[in-house]
Image (tube, rainbow, N blue to C red; front, side, top):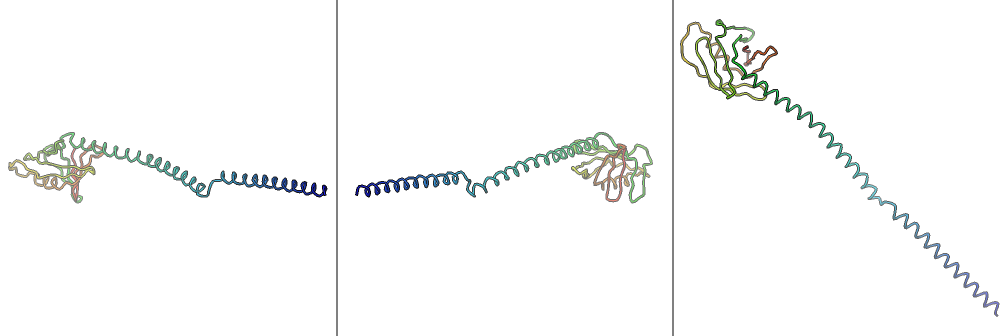
Length: 197
């Protein structure tokens, strides 16, 4: 009887020990995967991180590219403005003397040397001389070297065999100007040019 009770107690203790060991092992096994899983980023975190980095890189690249591209643009704009300012300064820098007019391949030169002139004043007015009269008026220029002459008036002396009418009729049709490499003023019409030195 005593042996039987002892066996039962021993068996109970063994079962209890086994249960305690099982619970302990189970909790350890359950705990470690939970910790491992908690340290693994979720799919959403994995997706978000590269997207943020890529956007950041793209943004930096874009800003860098924009900066690089804007510098030449600014330089070009400044160069164009400077060039235009120089052209206008050259236009108004002196009294220009007529050398020749070329229309449709035919050239005409003044019969009286230095008689015909034009001066573009910085105030937007134009003055000049022909072989007979003085003339005056206004003008406008644009950034693309376009030139528009306003109404032109003149004194009314009569001179026989004057080239004034031919000169003035071409001058009033001028639409553009330029300064050539020899520092000559070239006034361009729809059908030809006038050269001044």
